[in-house]
Image (cartoon, rainbow, N blue to C red; front, side):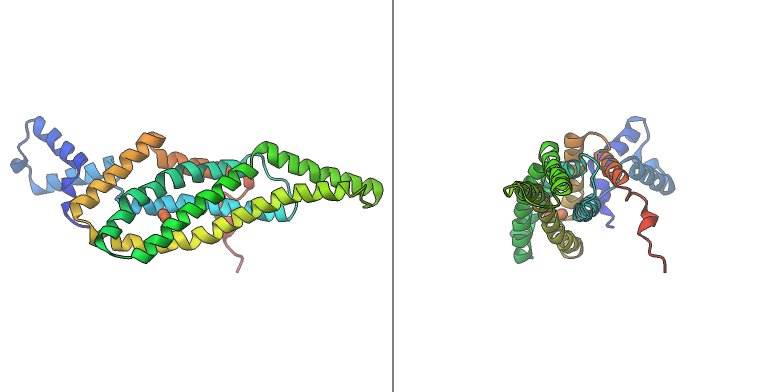
Length: 269
Ligand SMILES: [Fe+2]
Ligand SMILES: [Fe+2]
């Protein structure tokens, strides 16, 4: 981490606060000044723009796990707790697409374009954001409670008819009902699968190639200012501790699906 972080607005305010209390900056011993810097860091989130984007990828990855679990339950014809897919897609829309990706598109990608660096990668990343939004449109539409409920009822009704008539289709009606119910769920599964398939490499490429290169194309001052801009935008959209609240919401969905215990992912070896 570079040493020019005192340029940040909040640290500036912290220092001017000390000055207003009648303490001359020059008179502060270096050890006290260092302690003040540490305290200032603890008071603010202390998250730089790259860390900010990377931890948001953590939220995205946790939703991918939720989608994966949902796909597996649909495949196994297990019932899903109501709203888990719609709520997860809502988090993707509001937090990942309308905030995280918007910041990448407004503040990160144009700087690479201007610097003439990683242009091909940026083009692909941008196209993937657009594809992701189209997939989320589908996921949101197909996971609407009324759509899913109807799909389930069609499947249930088909199963009941099969029991009564020993599987003989009634003028093709049961087969059609079953197919329609299954189609909705299969389309939903496919959209989630495509989303997972694209976003795992997308986020990994940004974490390992794009973000590490970002510091080399902006000044330390610009880097700091951007961190604050991200944080301000996050607060504006999601309120204080917006990130923490988002993590909490994801945790609640994981709990509904019984995938919240991290230790459950440890293999017995
Ligand atoms: Fe991205
Ligand atoms: Fe990203």
